Image (cartoon, rainbow, N blue to C red; front, side, top):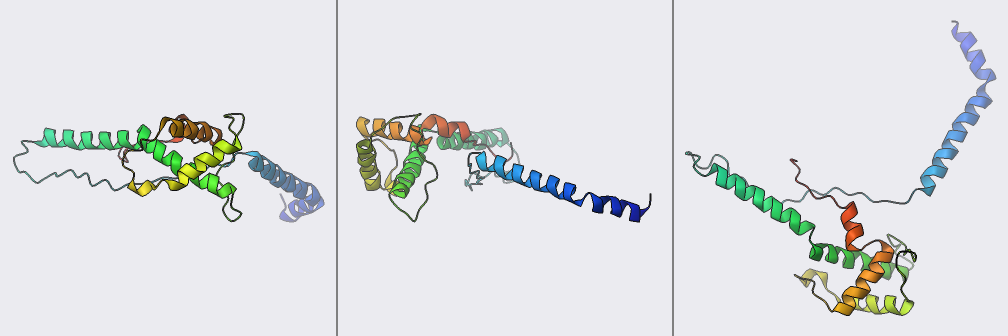
Length: 177
């Protein structure tokens, strides 16, 4: 096939080729624009759990040591998925989004979905006042009043920050697994 002949054919069909490329670009823009925004993060945490291989020359406690390392990692993974840890994450995310709604400079991560949970503006204001007073850096076990827990769960469900929603999208595992 002659190269000049191929170029002439492409030159005659240039508008068709350009229209196909433009249609693909517009379709991609429309489909991506309608997808819900998602944020994905991968975190590697330095745990301080160390396997001391080679310390003992007789290897008498190799099984016990491996069991201790496995147990420590298992406990750490359970802690990361525990109800209290998820509650702290919910408080942090919800406080940020509720403060962002009243501010023009910060954009919230999510908008509430009233179909998931219906709450009043008064309940939102009461929850925001309570959330602002909480210092997350000094809490070891987030035990609050039942009214606060109920209100937190009610509003968090509308935002998708409730315990079940977070656990559905959270994966905690060892890097070696």
